[in-house]
Image (cartoon, rainbow, N blue to C red):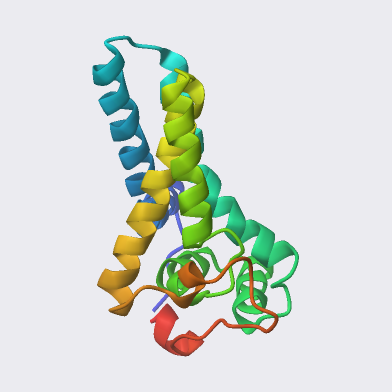
Length: 188
């Protein structure tokens, strides 16, 4: 039997299905954005004023804490097996496996510098001070970042059954602490 040559339609359908898969696996980020926008909406109701800049500030603030993951991958965590696996998937253009691996495995990364209670307390304090001084930009930014961290803590409890150990530590530990299921289990 002769193999069919892929048509342009089949390739585009495969791309759409692949993009749908990636978007579904990336829903964690959409939740962060949604919570940040909800924070901006609550503050809009409080202040009885609307400003489009608050929407963009809330989106930026709700995604900013995840820059910690990129800093980890590109600097102090680049020798960890978790990071090496990510870069292997990137190099081999295995996008579906990469997205699934990050979506299922990122909760086991316990060595992030800024994912801790101390940063949360600092942001909360900054948000309260900004609110007292009516600095609305900073209230929206810090509040959106707080919603990000609050959701991450909640999700840790749901997925891991406990709060990730990095939340209790200031900064990062001296040794690698990525502990989780084997790579084969994550990508299946």
